[in-house]
Length: 400
Ligand SMILES: Cc1cc2nc3c(=O)[nH]c(=O)nc-3n(C[C@H](O)[C@H](O)[C@H](O)COP(=O)(O)O)c2cc1C
Image 1 (cartoon, rainbow, N blue to C red):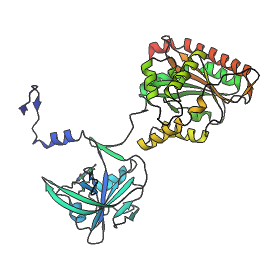
Image 2: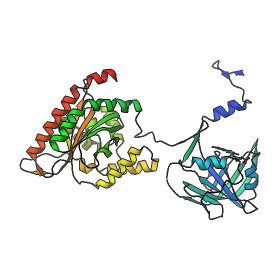
Image 3: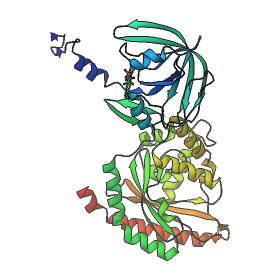
Image 4: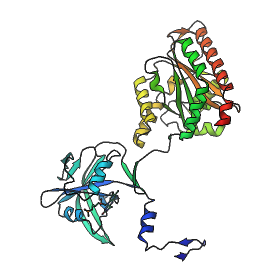
C-alpha cells in the first residue's frame, strides 16, 4: 500500500484480485470469435476485450490470453469472425466460455463470407483476416482487417459487468422506480369505486394513469368490460410532446421546458404552440382526443414496445418518431354547439393536496358522433369523479 495525496491508501497494483475487481466495474459487450481451424473443425471463444480500432483502414481488435487453448487453434484459421451476442444468448456465451470439446454441438450456424461460423440469432458479425498478432503481457493483441460486416438482428446485445450478464436499458424515457409505481397503484386503488361507476355509467373503459416521474406515466388501473381493456394495464406513456399535456399543464416552467426538450425537431408543432396547448388544457381543466387522426395500430405498437421496457436506442428513436407524428391529432378542439364529434377519449387530472397532478382519469370507448352538449356533460361527470378521487388521496400520501 502507498499513500496518495488525499491521504487515502492506494491498493497494490500487483494484487490480481484488486485488478480484477476494479476492472470488473467497467462493463463490456460479449462477442464470440469463431473460425475454422486448420483441421477443418469450427472453433469459438468468448471475449469481452473486443474493440473497434480504426475506420480507415477498417480494423478491429481483441485480446486472447496467451494461455488460451482455443486461441492456439483459432490462430491456425485463415480468418476469424466476430459474432456480437444478443441479450438472450447467455446460454451460448456460457457454453463457449467453457472448455468442452464439442461446443458447436446443437448450435445452428452458417458460414460467413470468409467461411467462419455465424451463429443464428446474433446481433451482427464482423468478418476479418488476421492483420497482426502482438504480445501485451499475459495477453496477445490480435488486430483484424475487416473484410465483411453486417447487422443480422438489431436487438439489444448481451453485456457483462461485475461477473454477471445483463442488457442495455436507455436512461431517457426510462423505467420507473418500483416504489413510485406501487405508490401510483395505491393511489388508483382509492379511486376504484369512482372508476367503476364511470365505466358503468358510460358503458365505457375507464383507466387511471399515474404520473411516475417527469418522464413517464403508467396505466395503473382499468375498469370496464371493453375488449382488450385489461391490456391497457401497465401500459407506459412517455411524457414527451404531444403526450402528457394533462400531466404537465400545471407544472412549473422547468418541468415544461424538460418536456418540450423531448420533442423531436421533425415535430409539426412548435414549442410555442405546445405552450398554447398547455394553456388551453389548463383553462379548460380537462382534455380530449379525437378518433383516427393517426394510424392507431402504429402508435399502439410503439407504446407496446415502450411498455416492454426492452428496446435499443435505435428502437427508442423509432418510438419517439412515431409518437411525434401524432402531434396534430392532439390539437385542441373547440366545441361548437350543434356540431357532432367523434371523441376517442376524455381525460381529467386528479390533484393532490399540494395541487400536483398525481393521476389522470381517462374514459374511452364513448358513443360515436356525440353533439357538443353531450361531450360537455360527460366531461363534467368525469371532472366530478376526478375531484372525488383527489379528495381521497391524502390518507394514501400519508402512508406512501
Ligand atoms: C464475459 C467473458 C469475457 C471473456 N473475455 C476474454 C478475453 O477477452 N480474452 C480471453 O482470452 N478470454 C476471455 N474469456 C475467457 C474465454 O472465453 C474462455 O474461458 C476460454 O476461451 C476457454 O478457455 P480456453 O481458451 O483455454 O479453452 C472471457 C470469458 C467470459 C465469460
